[in-house]
Image (cartoon, rainbow over all chains, first blue to last red; front, side):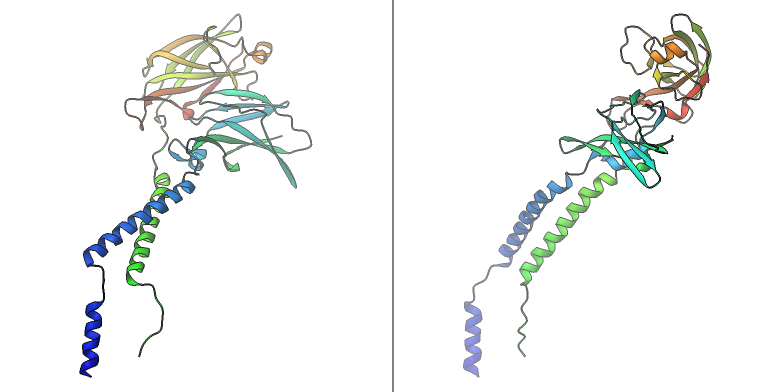
Length: 157
Length: 172
């Protein structure tokens, strides 16, 4: 019995190991390096978010304020708010079907500005919904964002 | 009894735990940074009011407007638009000078209009084919203020006062 306990004591003494100080430093270095790698990788996804006025562009849609009218095939629009409107989508609706058309070129309606565009609506549609499209930033690029339909203006035909 | 169960070593488990915690913290911070920005877009003070006190139709597609500041705050200017019909949206901008091109109907006072102050200006609708043919039946003005930009110190910003927009029936 004495011989086996002596042997095990010798075995423990001869095992090499890292000192606690070195192991702590290694641990911290590994963690920091891994965190940096994951951050750089995840940054690519986060930057996809479209921003406007330093906020998510979805939050800006509720600040859009405009009036629109549609007479004789002509759409008139007045931007009464402080958010510039880049473009418009026109959603035509009738029971059972709807269709969305975009203007041929961006309307670029600044705050306080007004414009008129010819928008033919053929077919027996009952109403149109004018949906604003904003221009935001995603990283260094400009990106369009179509606001939800409830931020649009409904016009009965 | 000797256990045969395999497991991750203690050192490795600490590393994994800390990496997950830091990654989650960074992810939540980045995402929340945008949504936690609850500062509102600059708005016009509630008691801003500009009225059209009087108007006079001049010949040559012009209209003489007298405005008065009926509110409690200075007004820097206003956007003026006309309509050919009282029930229609006023979407045709008027302009105050032949030299001004594509001004969107914007008129800025030389000095901000103080409360109870009156200002008179002639506007033209010569550029609007529809108004020239049908005449002007409605005038709408939307005041704006030049205010300090909350985000950039020392910078000013034009803020439209949508709630103070008024319109009157005219016959020019």
